[in-house]
Image (cartoon, rainbow, N blue to C red; front, side, top):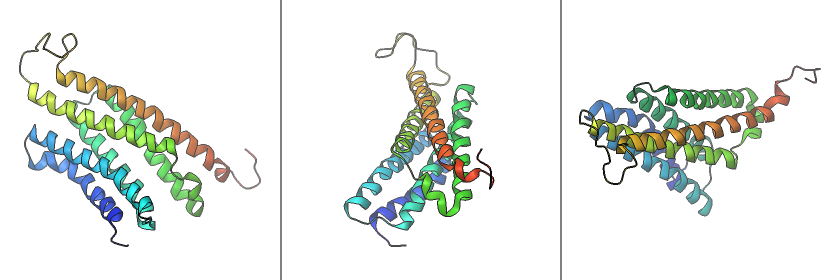
Length: 210
């Protein structure tokens, strides 16, 4: 591996993924929520920066090509597990989270099976938008869990300035986050189906056309 700036950023993102739940182990809430949110957002921004620098400085490498999508998946999967646990196992979050996790496992399995033909499942523009939407949704949901902890135990402030109807800031962040994570789940399923269609010819038995 060459120690270029893009590769270092990718490596740091890989390290940041398991560091997200550690925030809740070593820090008390709501500071842990804010630390996890900040760490996740910084990692999400570096995802764009390392790709941009690699292309601009002509420092694209095999390490970056292999580790960049792994870092993205690790960040998303670990963060979703953490948020699901701290959201009280909200079924409206569990359903899209399950779809996202299933797709990631499914596509990873396809790539492993295809081996040298895995290049057929290269990352598409829609898949990049999927990852971006996932990261934005997760950031908003982290904001919601932190605000919910801050507001926990106090009477609801109906008609609080700047809030629609009786929604608290935590409710607003959570609802927006849920809407975004469902949209991300739709994009996730769409890209998963696209990869399956591309891999289907290699899943047929020899001598069979269907």
